[in-house]
Length: 242
Image (tube, rainbow, N blue to C red; front, side):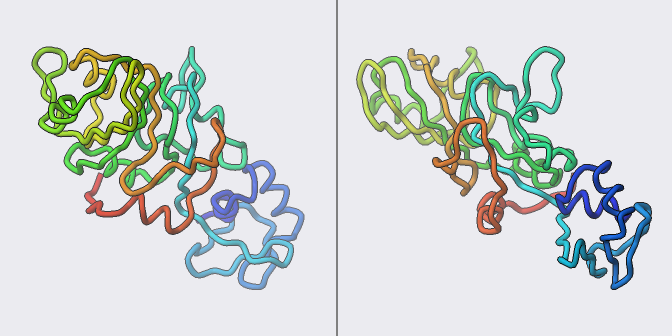
């Protein structure tokens, strides 16, 4: 691996900034000063220091975002703002992409990563990764709805969803619920409630697999997952090659 890419992956700065840093003579590899960005190193074994401090290598990065409304879950769009527009510059060199999708008007937990294999396994229909949503629903949600959701409901006339777990938090003119599904059809939560004569008026994803949204994370902000949280998002996933 090139030295400049190694330092980028370690979060030191942009490629442009890193070239200046390297040429300043403050980067040492295996005890020797290196002023060439193209110097090849072994990221797993070579010891790299910057200004006397060791530099840790990160091959993959995992970011939790509390997605706000108004942003699409994509890396680029000609017309609409994307979730990458909310990512601080210090992370942009990682070539991030969203592992999963939230609709433009849906808030909550979104994982951004450069780990393509993890994203593939999270999104694979074969894996049945559970995703839990909090919703406000116009209309009284009932025990009958719980039973229907547990069996799967028919959407668009001929598509039956997989069984889902519906929990009623409050029931009235506007009901509050949690819903756990194991698939990701287009607008699925909204379409499931439409199938039982109700309308979702607010939707927020609060959990993916065993990883829960950090409720202290403000809308539109993100942070790196802890090592324990990375284990939670990977929990129970048997890896398959892309």
